[in-house]
Length: 241
Image (cartoon, rainbow, N blue to C red; front, top):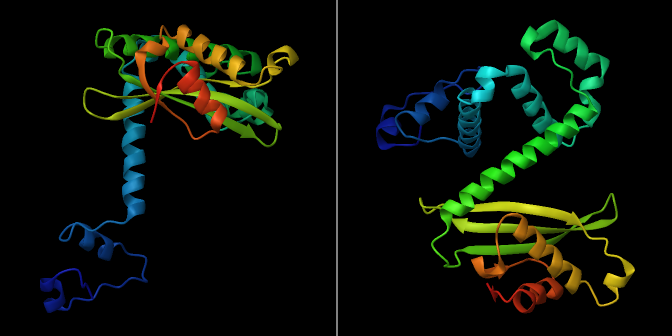
């Protein structure tokens, strides 16, 4: 019996839940607008996926060179899921392409192709971000927030430095861009004076690579320790948030 509303409780209509039917779920969704958190998450992921597919279908590359678009999407799948670069060289992968894919998609995907595609994707993404940041500027006013942090990779027993740029778009939506990461292995001469000097130099270099300066930021924040806080406040003279 549905207990979500007075009318349903008065009607006393039973809904079987053990017969593999979805009538109870549909009833809760339509009259009462009740859905589970999992359904909302699934729908949100589906909308994001559809938006991404629409952007790919409307691109010039998809219309002119479908094979190239396939290579780039395979590269994203390999990188985002930490798969081996030579995944496309496996015999099973080759058989799948030969049996299932169209002639336009029967392209060679090996570790060399994936490495070149990674460079191409990074370069195009960097150009797009540079253009976007240039549009977002408001004269010489500092409008960005810097987020610097350390990340530890237990498998590699190594530390990585990361720098993100946070901002609010014209639609008042928060947006965060990871400008870059770098494995922190300074030379002995650099470590002699502590990690602050090489860390500051790396931050300034990556900002310069995107056409940015410390003056473009009005605040900084981090989850890391005192060295990072000192570098952001005293090193590049940003207010702490």
